[in-house]
Image 1 (cartoon, rainbow, N blue to C red):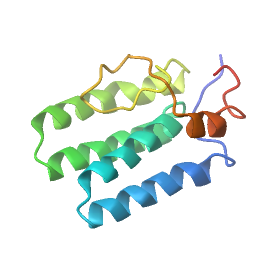
Image 2 (tube, rainbow, N blue to C red):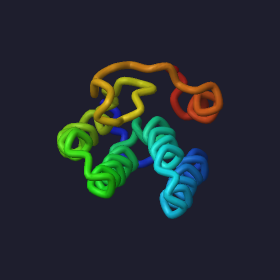
Image 3 (cartoon, rainbow, N blue to C red):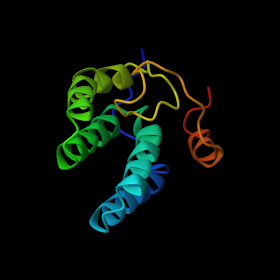
Image 4 (tube, one colour):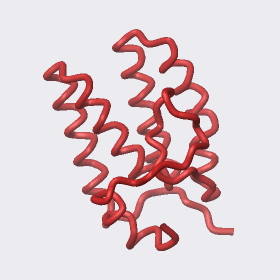
Amino acid sequence: MKFYWKMPDGLRPHYEKELVSYGNAFEQSDLQLAWRHLERAHILGQPWAVEHSEVHWKMLRFGFAIKSWKEIRGQILRLVFGGVKSFVGKIPTGNTGGADVPPLQVMEIPPDLREMLVPFSPNL
């Protein structure tokens, strides 16, 4: 069995760019754009346990910042189970990670993110 612990170095700059963009948008109080960048970081990081958990932690903090009990509850559950699913390679590809979507729902991956992921996840 192959374990998926940490994101490959070649994909890391794209993932980190989304997190930086999230932080910038959040600081500018553009919460809709900030969330969009978290969702994109989730899609990129989801296959790897460390990054997947990191994004859910940021989503949880976002939920507290906007005082959304639905998001807080949803992210706590995803933090408990999401990293484990990534670790063993059992994830719903494309899922954006928010409490507004079922945690096991497969979703379409945006074309630009798919292009970034294909070299590292050939089964896409």
